Image (cartoon, rainbow, N blue to C red):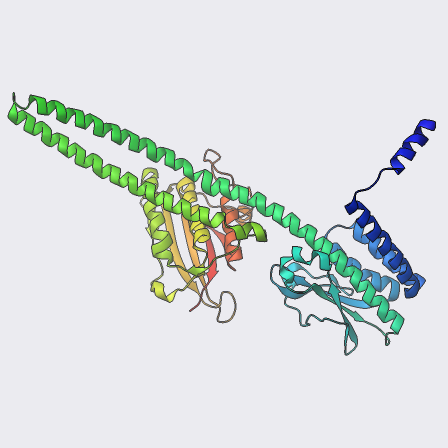
Length: 472
């Protein structure tokens, strides 16, 4: 006991540093202020219990959706008040109705732009009161969508009778508690989204950068072999030159053959250099796109849109790059775009990301296109690319451009077609290398461009497509 007493006495004499002392003084001061404030508030017993219930459940349930439901449930259960909760959507930068006491959570797919507006102060309109949901000023900078305000949303309450001053004051304070808890949950969700994005980015780097760069090794090995051939030819020419005095005509013939070999080798070198250069340009474009600082700051892909001619800037360079691989696999490429001049199809996209979307389709075509029998009994392996203009696809006077990628082979089942864009899902031959990440990447990139993806199994193969909005 004596030892414990001495130990406690020694610990009590530990002198805090200046920063810790200042923090302790600040906390104790705020505790005293809050103590006095609650005496002045003089909340009713039911109001105190409502606060306690809200705080307990806000800790027990961790998701943002659960907070939404708790907000409206507490007012209904304790005071028989109906309410609606409107919250700013950080990704769409708009106010949306997320939950009501009458019907509960609004499904995300139905959360449209709210008919109400943000308010700076409590406002009465008809039979409803609108209270601003304020976040934590000290943490405002961590939610980038807030800008110069800390208002996260609006809490709409429908009292059955005019609010007394005390009830109005309680609802203001209750809404403030909603704001602070919602702010915390948004920060947690934002951090979770950032972590998911970093994991996604790592997968994108592995799938779209590291693996394709293995082609460099093949290019260099072929170049090394050709350069060695140049050395052998040079040796032959030197030998022939030394012997030219003995057999002049024979030497001339030999020199001609050597020159022909040099020209042929030089042509092959130029072809390999062209392929290496194209691969380098393509990879560099995606590296620049992938490692933008904005991606890491925002926790998602940040688009840099520009006008892009898909035919000349994306499709034809990829056809040139993949031509040898298609030929080696015996795959016929059918490339046709709808008979509409390119200048009439204006698409504003992030060229680096969309180029990689097309690259994934080409890469999959090389891996998974399989032979089928035509009407004459011949085996055919076909990869087809086409384009369609879809009127009003995204709404009235909002057309879309659909790019179709058809490959011959075994038709997917409806379930496989539904799941093909899921992360890690694969339906191809396990003998082919792959991670099941490529089409998930396609889905993500097309989605942030405001587009849609899909898969349509055919009798003798499958069509995978995506649709992007465009201006006429």
